[in-house]
Picture 1 (cartoon, helix red, strand yellow):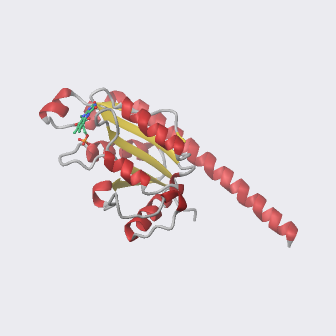
Picture 2 (tube, protein in one colour; picture 1 turned 90 degrees about the vertical axis):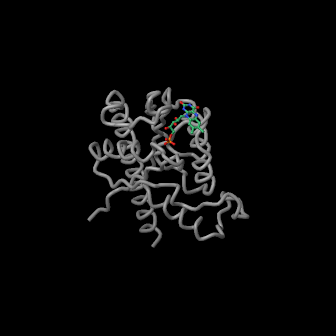
Length: 206
Ligand SMILES: Cc1cc2nc3c(=O)[nH]c(=O)nc-3n(C[C@H](O)[C@H](O)[C@H](O)COP(=O)(O)O)c2cc1C
């Protein structure tokens, strides 16, 4: 039986009292409704990835630390990635940058969807993250949902209710998920074609 594809949802915030888990779970629920994939939420707060204990350059691999090796395996296990991140001072959180920079080749060619949130949707941090994803040669879907948080949620700690508060954004998230699905299917068919050609070439040589 064919194995289901896995999409990793990487949460950008590790902050105490963060809204990220709720928002990520909501994005996941939209994804599940629109595709038949496995979804796995990655909480960077549970991944100890110290900033200073890998002496080598990630692009050259040869990771020395077990946690970096495990992180590498985790990212390799995903067919696609969804980053769900808040905007912090017009950028994206340091914990997310650190997690990305621990690896290099693992991100290459991965279909990726970027979901941001903030008072104005977090578009500026989305732009920043997009540049980094381009550098890593990820395959970024065109639609990047930018979810607006109310002042009450940001400043007064009001409870966020994604189904209610983000109902206007659901179509955007659905479009981005369908673009991610297209990317994943396209990638699979290219790989299948390459595997077929490789087999044919081997058959000719043998
Ligand atoms: C350090 C920090 C910087 C922030 N900077 C911005 C910002 O530049 N733009 C914005 O819209 N919201 C900003 N906010 C508000 C966050 O978008 C909001 O607090 C959000 O809930 C943070 O995500 P989290 O709760 O998952 O950590 C900032 C919040 C923090 C803690």
